[in-house]
Image: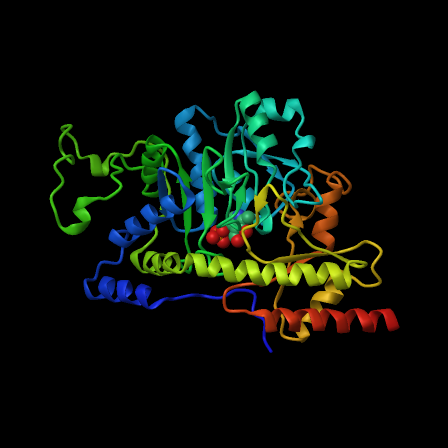
Length: 398
Ligand SMILES: Cc1ncc(COP(=O)(O)O)c(C=O)c1O
């Protein structure tokens, strides 16, 4: 049996949209991108969603939109010490400086208790990451953000369908950012989405994704071969006026077509992934609790079922890599749980010392995750459990 980490759902409805795009040679950002944006906004419960070319760009552009509110290059942004590195790359790409904060062991997300007043006073924004679909402590984060005047940019790349106190991931901060990459719950192959309650910020983001150009209509009529009345209305050409330093980060119609198809089957995908995730996490706790830790869903939240995380306990008679290797040898694809960025990522080491972020360092050293996606079922989860049991039996016998 094979247990791949991710899968790619391309529905028949997506194929119809793709055929329409190719037959009409309408590939760049158009009606399917707009359909995906409108439906994604509805799903998350926000006013607007802006499609971009990756989850990394979603966080980058969300942060870059803060320049319109007076942010300055080099300003500080608070991030968790452990996350997929794209979160922190985005801070740097947008021109800001990360301030790293350790994570909580139970949620795998930023620990608000460790955000000091002086950090919060320096920072213009905080980027909580809902890692593995587990919700960051949004009540405390929102309180701190209001107290110190920070914007909240949720990195919900791994948390489609997640909820905190019945509020959707991506709807609680000033901006929400999603990845639509292959392994994610809503996927367009490659892609990202930014969510916001503000139409004004949505316009800034549409401008940012297209080189900072002045015009930012949600649905550009010129894309359908029509003449735009607004283009020369101010005496210049709004299409070639640039109001801010922008990016080239549009989504194309083929990606959007796949994304729309994923939205057509969203409820079924979410339910299947949640069933797989809970089935596996309950078995891991019951059978391997002595050596392995995994997440639980708390009463205040709904976990967005991205993958199944495991942390090898410190006193286990084996290492994380020994377990990963055994799983891979049995055709179960695994991923680490990333790294403690300030102490292990070569682009950031130097400023901090080993020991500065004990939880992030521990999870970075001991964590792994495997897939629970919609093309897997109970048999696959049973197979993973059997393989882990075989591994632990062998190790205990050594
Ligand atoms: C937490 C987090 N943020 C950002 C990203 C970046 O998304 P992308 O790979 O679409 O650029 C990812 C990707 O998986 C992620 O897991």
